[in-house]
Image (tube, rainbow, N blue to C red; front, top):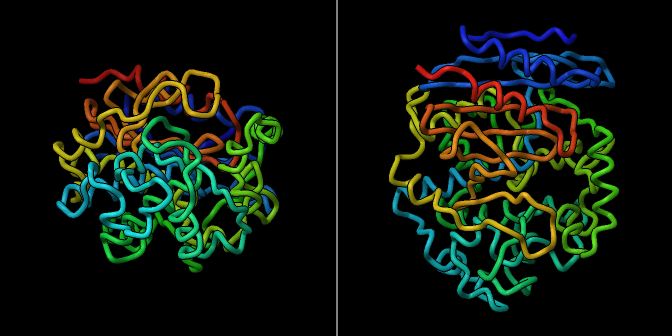
Length: 383
């Protein structure tokens, strides 16, 4: 059995046991788990291997790419701007980004953009890796693109494009890059969480491995009946279908350094859990969102069957936030957050005042590592 390190508060022993079981059959996996309740840390665990090539261990300060958990962070930033009265979910995107008002996208609202309803889940043009490093090029292409379906009439997951679309709105409103605004807004945790990894922190980031189930999911995606589901992930060739390879995709230092807020955030588990905790309760002296803002941001906007066929159960989204659903169970029915490719999960639960993050460098598709941990957390007695 894998030996893990860290601390747990009394009553959370079964959560720790579920975390340890996540390593079973994965000898070179690394992972970390952090849980805060009421703004205080009750679980802070880590273990395994950060880089299977060198055998270096996963340490307390090890970070990893959190993939689509980044969308949750970007949704927090958008909600902050709404809270400040600088952004409106119901306003058309072109109010903030005039170039977006082309090709039938004139009525797309900020809320629809956040909720995957803009019809831009994949690019019509094929991007190269070098091109996705160029923010202005990608956002310019998306602004002028004809939508893949009539915006607002349905949703399809904007797997990577979401970050540039919402990020450009944030950039126009905040008048700074999404990575810089993230750094300012989450100041207590900027030493351990980034959108756009600084070169000085590159040595802290785990090397990502592709497990067999993730590889199989990639093979199935290549055979998807519509090209747009595949292109949503690969952008036409800029990324491998599994999102990582040996020095490619999000294992490429250039990609990690670029601001790709649909999937490229990098964080430690404790920083990620702390940010989510701060959306609902004062955490290290910071509260990121107030209750009124959350009430507006968590109204369900996308649910049920998507535009492109996918087997159920299906997820639900509010204004960018992934809501509790049969597809992703969190701690309670009012929980909100976002999961990420390969097994990453981060969320907040306002009823129990919980901030949660599980991160790993061993990518699996459809696995239950985080689910078992959350199940164990749900069973913890609430006094």
